[in-house]
Image (cartoon, rainbow, N blue to C red; front, side, top):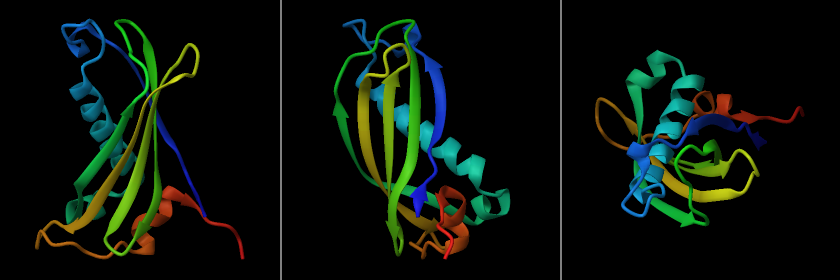
Length: 136
């Protein structure tokens, strides 16, 4: 079983910058959440999304380099692993011109039933669109 990565590209705008003229750390968190949601929306039917949601348990973020105005960035995410009601999602943000990693993140998510707001088991139906399964 191998995760299927999902990518988006963005260009750093002046609104993303802090007083040091590099991307504000809060923007990276926003981008991590945005690409995670986009991945969920792109691979999961609307009826499933209405019934279930993901809540963040924690983030671990490593800021490796700075990004600046006008740079094009590639955001890549995938589900690293899952068990019961939790999954670990990875996100890498890299500079497009040289491929250097700007940020690496691990986020632990809890799968929630929208009606009860309680954790619910991650089924094969839910996870299947995010992985390549080897033939038996």
